[in-house]
Length: 299
Length: 254
View 1 (spheres, rainbow over the protein chains, first blue to last red):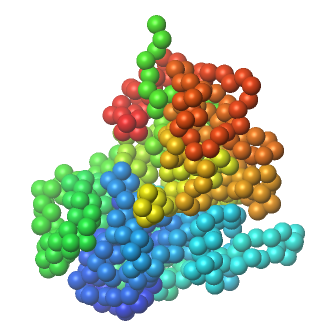
View 2: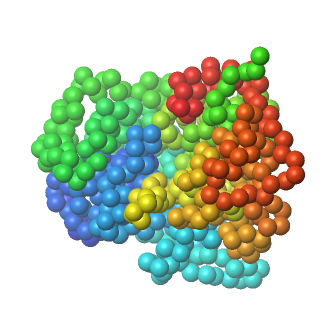
View 3: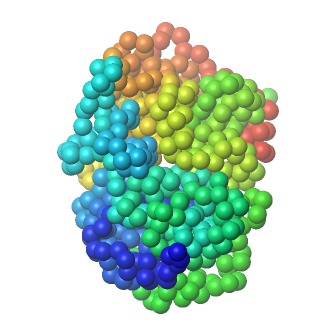
């Protein structure tokens, strides 16, 4: 069955207040075109989760779409901090539940396996745990190992309403390949109630079947497939294109103040009709061709 | 004639000297990347290098802007996931050494990468943990690399992102945490930790630096043994590898 839809239709399936996990890691495979469409459609009150905070979550936060963020800290690598997220935490407008990379990954893993909780060695003795206990005490607990009697910290599973995953290739049913490291994406998709796949290109079902061991997300988890070349721009997609340093710097500069970020949103999100309009805005085919990855290097 | 080298180069070399062949090493960004690639090219060719997001033993030929840059994944022999690296390798107890950096460290090796305070009492939110808390909790030992400044080597820190020996003594073991910090490498000195009190202890001072330079730029007084040797300076081959092979564009070395 074909699940191929437009980006607008896939975003339209999401309701205000839902919990979305996003596939980005800092400045790579971020769900950027998806985030821009979420902002254009005016969704509100979202909960966003990901192991390492990335540009997709920061953009949504800067646009006022995010009420709650569950993450393990993050940055835009050398380009700068997650300015909108940090500002939201500092002024109290964003409810941030801050963990470590592995504790979020374990929460997704427990969610993906249908387990009631997962024990972890991390977080103990830290102010991260003290802060979690003060803010969302229901998400952590002490448990005793029934076999050894040892005391463990247990985490509650994460089960997002929707996992949004930016991938290199998928078929019409949503069987999706991810090349390069996959960080938390396999567990995100399995923990979520459903998955929206944003793919650089759609392959035939026969093509996927020939190399089915590369399928990271099974189609049975997927509700929508959107074919969207350069959907992660200005972040990178391994084997497809490099990050756009000019556009990331432009973003970092704009994110320094709420006013300049509003101007950025006007120009690059509200001021363009759709993803094609955005790509034209950032330099069109001429610029995108410069970013295309060398197949051997992957960047 | 003495060799010319920068404090960053000495720190990277000191980090590399801590690593042994065959070890499994979890690496963050910056100086630890240089230290581990240097070790792999010199004293530890069979070392395994891990990046938290799912990368094992990359052999980059271009310098990246961070762990999210595919340049630093080049020629890896495994590209997998957090659960695979931080779970099945680190949480399982297979990481020998984890490198950590930070905004602030206290005398017990507790690290802050979350909040930066200013004199007006306002806090800025910074990077947070990433895999740092996991590495600090689960590696057999950690090595902390940071600049030697009074505001960074602090008596009390704003936030414990990654626990060291907590309040000292056996507090860390009581909390059920493995390992703990074994070295703090700065641009002035190298420290280890007293076996009983778990307070930071001066291990060596870098050439050209005095004990006063070390102590005047710290917010607490470390344990000072009677004799403190000089840190061994880098050798010419180590400097050549750093400058020509590992970081020719000086992205990590500043």
